Structure formats: structure tokens, C-alpha cells
Image (cartoon, rainbow, N blue to C red; front, side, top):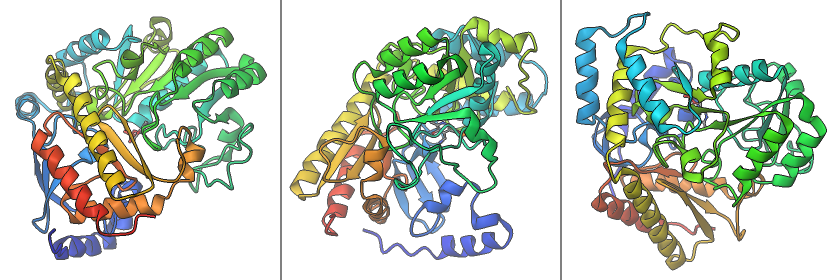
Length: 436
Ligand code: PMP
């Protein structure tokens, strides 16, 4: 374990706070303990901070770096494009090339369109659903994050006290300054509960434009859908004439080339991709059914943005999709994720820690709890988040970065030795405290 002097980072943070609100560029990054990370460089599966500490990176910039840092194919594609022009505000060939690759890979995609972040793309998807159905209500789920827009940042991480009864949850605003008018257009439900969805659509169905979900609840506890839940959501939405929208911002290009819809064989009407699609460059994608996506083509639904389809992000996406299409990529990511989780379970049992290890594909989270299963946000909210944050801090001291909420991400460049290094750090971290 390093002595972990962080003088450079501390000074930079102190200086930045004089001019940069909060000293960070995204409020989630302020949650990194004991202080926000200041990185100097990264290569492959490792990063080095401004004080010279080297870490195994299992945070992957919150998900995008599916190919690790400075992947040679991505860097080469971006360098080539830089010399040809980095911004056009007009059409260029890569847009069609990348769109063709995406339509081939994503089951629900008859057409795609580009924007820059998951938040923006989710906003477009919801707008398309309202325009396609002529209805206003959006059904979303407790603990699900679809970006920070006013209309969707509802009941992301509410306290148990604020959530109201399970059968009829209160929608809870996510931030100061948010319009409370959005509460009239949103219905919040517990996820992974077919009956709750069935009842909500029976009650509100004729006014529901869309049911929106993360098909794997990565944002809150790495929770898999219960068997047949996604299929039921598909059938119920179809019956009531509402669109099914999958937020594949994390699942996309991570659990399969076509995302969770490929893995589970359930095809939504619309899906949104971001993070891994351009392996770390800002790009998001809305993919969907011809008749719905055509609403943009005809101008019924506005979709604009100065940086949409920018050549740098598309050059990165073109190279990323090429790399991710190589045979064996996803089976390997799945195997590595399972191995990390299996061995983490062994360590947790050996250290007699009351915890569950959740893993879907190359993402893992350790939940500190006495519960036998955690299949919903309410169950997650009853887990010990203080211990999760402590584990993230402890692992950082032992040279492994994970997200502050306890999520671990693996990339295509993590090796067998890296997994062993990560498990060694977990073993050492679990030795250091009573984890109860
Ligand atoms: N949806 C999900 C599932 C996400 O995890 C995120 C980002 N964490 C978003 C939407 C928003 O994406 P962005 O941060 O690119 O706006």
C-alpha cells in the first residue's frame, strides 16, 4: 500500500475551487473520497494521478473507456480526422458509415441519430415518444438514472422516507431548481415488478407515451432484470400502445454489441446509447423504429445541436465499433466479469463480511447488507452505502480505482494479471476494517 501523499491533487483542488464551482466539472465527481481525483495520464488499464500514484482503473471514466486508455486504434483514427478537420457543422461521410454499423448491430434500429450525451439523447427519445403517441405521461422507475434533465431526474436516489408507499410511490424531484411541473407528467414505479407495471398501465395506459428503463439496473446496485420481466414490459407496453424505451447508456456495447436488447432478446421501440459507443469521446445515439424515427426526418420533432455528429467523435466511434466487432470480445468480457465476482464472493466469505456481490457482464458491485437478495432500489437503499464508500476509498489506497458508489468496470484491456491485482487489493482492503 502506498503512503498516499496527495499534495499535488490537494493543491490543485484548492486552487480550482477559487474559480471552478465546487472544483469539479460534474457533481458526481465531487463524491470521490477523501478528495476528488486529479489524474495526470492513463494507458491501457492503468492511470497515474498528479502525485505519481499508479492505479488499476476499474472506474473507466464512469463507463466510456471500454477499450481502456489511449487505445492505439482510437488514437490513430482521431489523429487522422484531426488533420482532415475536427468540426464541420455539415454532413460528412463518417456519419453514414457509423450509422450503418449501428443499424447492423442494434436490434431495434431501423434508423439512428446522433447527439453528444446520454442526457440529451434521452430527452430526444422522450420527445419522440410523446410526438408518436400524442400522449404525455412517462413511466420511469425508482433508482433509475436517465441523465440530469428536468423531465427525467425524478426519484433517482430518493430517501426511503421520501418515496412513499411501494404500491404508489411519490415522484421525488432530483435537484434544486428543477421545475415541479414535471411531476405531473411522470409516473414512478418499482422496477422488476410486473404486477406494478401492469396495474399502472391499466390505470394510466391511455395517456402513457413511454415506459423508460435501464434494462439492467447498473446505476443502482447492478441489478439484473428478473426472468421474463423485460418480456412482460414489452408485452404490456405493446398492449397499451405505449413505447418501450431502453436506456442503454451503460449496457450498450458492454454486455453485447447490440446491448441488453441483444443479450435478453427483447427489442424496445427506441433505445439510447452513449458512454462506450465512442470509447471515451462524447457521442450518444438514439436508435429506433422507422415510423418513430421518421418524425425527425419529416421535421415533426426537432433535434438539433451544434456538435451533433462531430467528426472526431464519429472517427472514434467508427474505430471503437470495429474493435468491438472482433470475435471473442464479449465472451471474454463476460468471463472476466464472472471470474472477478466469483473470486470476490470467496474473499467476502473468507473475511466473514455480510455482503452480496452483484455482477452483470463486465460490471460488479459489492453490497453491504444482511438481506438475502437485493432486486430493487428500495432493497438497495437499505444496504450500507457508508461501507461501500469506505471500500472504494480503501481500494484507492491499495491502488485500485472503482466508482465512489462501489461499481467496478472491466474493459477489453484488463488482463488476467489485472484481475488478480484487483482481487489482491480487495483482500487487503477487507482485512483492514470490521465491515459490518
Ligand atoms: N442514462 C444512464 C443509464 C446513465 O448511466 C447516464 C450517465 N451516467 C445517463 C443516462 C446520462 O448520460 P450523460 O452523462 O452522458 O448525459
